[in-house]
Image (cartoon, rainbow, N blue to C red; front, side, top):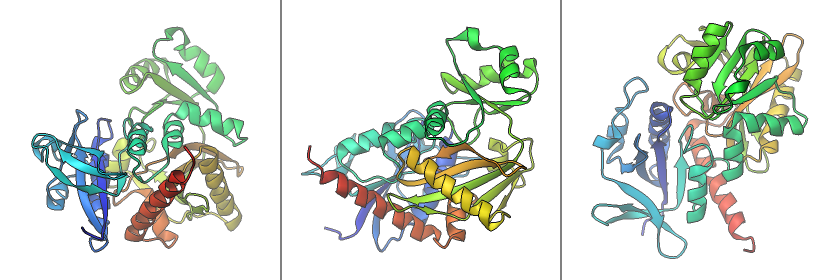
Length: 364
């Protein structure tokens, strides 16, 4: 039996962030130390089916603009319980066992991957997995509940209203304009990568944008426009938390859209570290740690904030499985803090193993 740690890297998924997740998975798998880890490449296709990706060379062909088709890459598999407290990858058609799994790196963005769904399954299997647990993942994914928890924890947030698709009487542009002012932002409550996000300045735009956002979720967030700098901070750890040097996103589009993030090489400027005086940078780091703790997160998260001209900091949102593409802020900020990409992935896996070991020590 191999003495290496056997890690399953999960990527893809059913969400609108499928292509971004493939790109993140490619980079994570490529950076894993092959002298230390055996790697299972498992892609989840757009229908929610797990499939093997036979080689890293195949995965390396993916691109956000032209993602590989997982249905054409490999056979259907599933992670199933193995002997004792172990787990294995099972090929469904042949019934062949493809090897054990010691830990999982679920680099899945959006619903069914980042929202506690996959985390719950992996916990049922007793497997260590990278990132926050079921509760932190679920609350961190739902922007409505994120803001409610942060508000109750005394952390500053922008004004917001949550709209449900079936409660059409609340879908009033006039009422939202009165409460939040213009412009305001509209976005699906459970989505990331700026999918379905719109900046609203007129009733005509509101109607079409609301219809678009409700394609992705049954609940939509409407948030006040905050004029300020977009500051981000990476957090790493379970109990003792490392907050990275802050970074700043300087959008070249109207806002930091999906296109600006992934499709336009000049869509945004990324400044790491952000040009902040030491006192402000320390406040950003402390607030990032507070957000991480208030939401019950573990492992990793990226906290996004607004810095207003008067020095006020507001929490925008948290990303519990932030992007790991080559241009993603989380690994870049941790790199600027002294934790390189391969070391970062190694530490995340170790944090997952440590958490599971502690959970297993509890009385059932």
